[in-house]
Image (cartoon, rainbow, N blue to C red; front, top):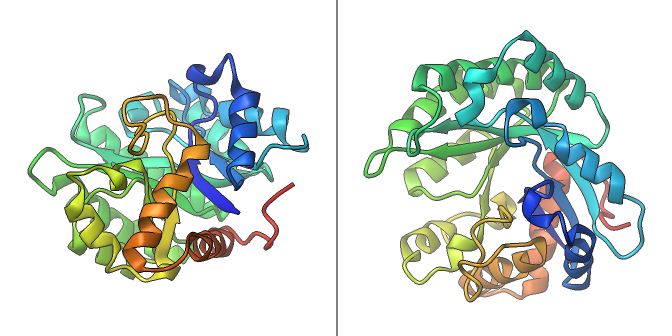
Length: 275
């Protein structure tokens, strides 16, 4: 069974068929999904947990886990009440990670200073709650500015915890991937790995050891080829895993086993991810 390590299951784009979407994932061989709790605003970071609690235990759907965190663009919303809510959510047993958090200098959003400060405050809470982190990083086009600052922050404020985390939807070069490994992170690939023009990303992926990989959809975005442009869903993580298997020259079953083992190791879960 595969694990979709990053999907926004609380998205309104699933409002009409969320259960059917989850059943398609199970039928495709997806045993678990990590639902990302960032919401549209910081106050909505509990949406993913609500989805987990609605569907966990139902037959024919994947096991659901949740995260909670404030997305970089919403870090200007952080105040004491938001941080208290984050800490409360991270104490819930289904909430196994803090994220997605990080830096995004590509899109307009919160000021860079607010993003850096918000990231550090969330790292402090994640460390207190002993939860790994899910990192979003996107620099300005043609630069590595956000990556340079992110890795410095992680080195100073996170590496000493030994808790590690995930570089979600990795889209940078080998230097950033190698530094991520050195900091104890897994590297997760989404549907963009399958795009025709993504050969530089595939060149990075093949240099990574199998015990450093995760797969994800980032659903409802980044649908893999040949479904690019459509609403993405966890069932389609199979296509990204298939591309990785081809790169490594191993079976799809081996990629599924390796990435599942990596997920379970990072989050200290048992071997049986299904219901």
